[in-house]
Figure 1 (cartoon, rainbow, N blue to C red):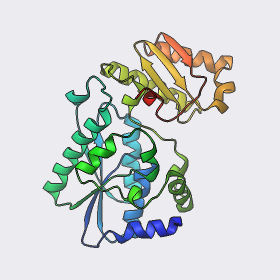
Figure 2: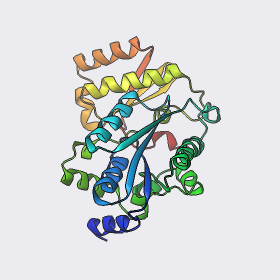
Figure 3: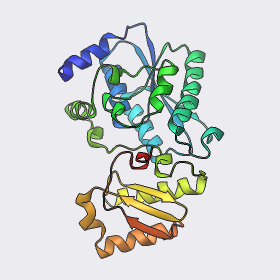
Figure 4: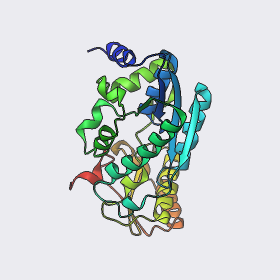
Length: 265
């Protein structure tokens, strides 16, 4: 099926009388869904973003900025680190999605929204994604997935719309940077956020910092290896990471890949 046909299929599900709450992270997928529903449907649309200690502040700010640009209503819910995921269990995503979307469902009921939609796409079923089960159990719609839209199509459409976010790298929550069954503490999350932001500002978009105790493993695209080991760049990274409290720093020679913490699951 052509991309345009998939989009028409997606839009045909919604009625002008619908009041839609879009779970909005500010990433590529939820941005595409929000933009599509706001500009191509006659339904009432509101974005909702959940702010937790494991979501970088810069992502929250980008979400706010896009909603202002799109002139769409935006609600932010703040939640503390749930006790159920304090030890970063292997079903963390399932537990987290359940907690977060129950909060969203509570808001939707109070405000009279009859549909909650998230930005999962058809590519998401190819990796370990226990969070998808939580969405199904809670009757959360995933319009992009249901229409069969994949990441490449979504990026191409955003590029056609002229939205700069079209090539934004994927950013999972900061808990994915820590090993499973590893106690989460705010200091570790802060170290990861600061270190990744430093790498991004150096031009290593999408870089990951996998942290365990005081050791960090940097994942960047192999095309950046030559640049990252240059003396000036390497020295700057060492200074920045050590200032954040990281004692041992290594470069992963396999490079960045999605779900590298899932290989033993």
